[in-house]
Length: 201
Image (cartoon, rainbow, N blue to C red):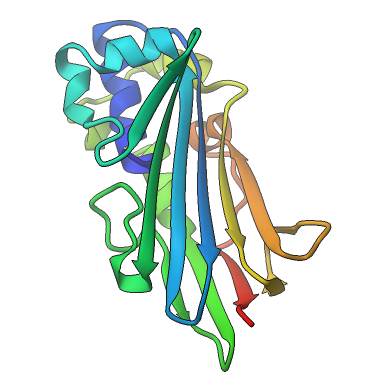
């Protein structure tokens, strides 16, 4: 379950069980050659939230489908890893446009995340995606649920040669951290895409 599933999940938990817990998500793309890469999707939440997800209607979100869940104390962590050719990489959802990976010249690979998918799934369209029309109270509960939590997109490899994301000090990766609350409230100021060009050799 990645971002589209999170939007539906938040509505289901709000309407059926109330909201308690936290959720943070990282999407990490590592480019290993001109044709291959590795995607790691990590979701961290309170065990109380995990227990709600795994029972009743919320279980329909297929949390951590294809990944591995570990529980330590009051924290549940789902990690989904996919390695191989770019066309075969799995971002943990049913979308064909989670990321776009193309050649940017000899020894260079361009990775981008279209941001319209991100904003629509966690913004005004979230209720429609879940089959529910959200009232002001439900939206306020969702905001309280996601306050202080983020989704992080990271792209890395041998060297980042160009990006509109925040470049790491070592120049090997770039990332953007987006507060969930900004997505829900429609207050994000994102470009049309988040991208990085990676040198692979």
